[in-house]
Structures are given as structure tokens and as C-alpha cells.
Amino acid sequence: MTIVPLQNPTSPVIVLLAAGEGRRYGGIKQLAEIDGQPMVRRVACAALEHGVPVIMVTGANAERVEAVLDDLPLQIIRHAGWQDGMGSSLAAGIRGVDASFPQASAALLCLADQPLLGKVLVQQLLQRHAEAPERVLVTEQDGISGPPVLFPRDCFAALTALSGPHGAYALIEREAARVERFASSNGIDVDTPQDLQHVRDWLATDSSR
Image 1: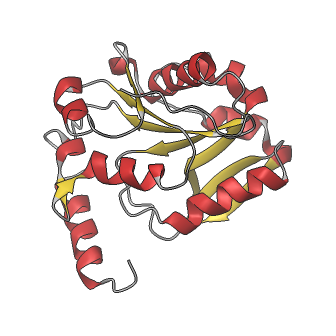
Image 2: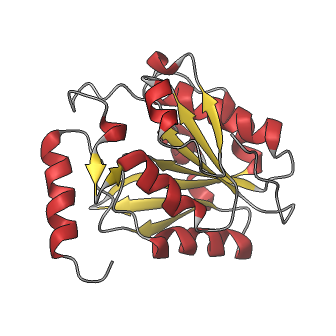
């Protein structure tokens, strides 16, 4: 995969997590078709539209997932320890940011199973980071915090130490004094076939996309 150079030394990097097995989904959910393309490719293309480097972390079914991304200008990190959980995959992605983009100002963590996340929300996070680079920027839907989350560089050491299934929630709580929250209304995680159908139904009736 092509490693995209930073045009701006203070640019953040988008880290897309696509390493999970999809046990609840019952198959390779990264390859689930949405609007004629695999979900993981749809999310990757949307991320690339923001003009910052993108790193994709793969794991389970890596070869098949990577095959649908092969022509895209992003970096892929194949994480052998994906079975250790999201925390481990996130740590692998942050290590990749450090290695390939040592001057990056932040990492914007996104999930490859959130195909409805709009351009506006991600752009808001990137713009706010440019204005207040020390802030931790967290998305919130129905009172629940989760990705996309933007972590400034001084969080990287804590992120690379993560393991297990719990992701970065403890770090967000620890950094509560500098957390800003952004409302989201369409951050559906595709964890089950029913979730996928919900996404397809929403897209079929949405005239603004």
C-alpha cells in the first residue's frame, strides 16, 4: 500500500479499525455490500476525501479485506494480534502513525463498520482540532460516547499501551477535563445483519447523501 506523505506537518491521521472477526454479524462484515461496494471500501473512500493520511488496521480475514482496498492511497497495517480486542488493534494503529507520520499532530479514530458517518462530522472534528489542538474530541450519540474520537499526540503513549476489548474509554474518562463532545445522529455500528439492513433502509430513503 502507498504511504501518503503529510502535506502539512501538523496534520492529523485518520486511523480506521477493520480488524474484527464479525462474530455477531456471522460473516466478514467488512465485505458486506452497501450501495454496490464493500462497506470497508465505502468507509475508506469517505475518509480519504478529507485530504489527510489514512491508516487501515486489518486483522481477521485480512487478505480478503485488503483485496478490496488495494488501489486506494492509504496505508494498511495487518495486526496479527487482532484477537486480543479493539484496544490491541487501536494500539497497533497508533504505532503505525508514530512510525510513518512522526510529526502528525493527532489520530482520528474511526470504525470501518460505521458506514453512515457523514463528511460534516469528521470535518468538524478536524477543524476543531486545528483551532484547539490540545483537546480530545469525542462523538456522542444518545448519550453514549464513542468513535470517531480524535486524540492529540500527547495521548499516543497511553494509546499504544492499550490491550483487550475495551478500547480507549478509560483514557477518555481520565482526560475528561479537556474532552469536547460532538453530537452524532447516524453513527450506526454494523454488528448484525439487522444493523446492515437498517443502514440500507436509511440510505434508500435519504435524499441528502
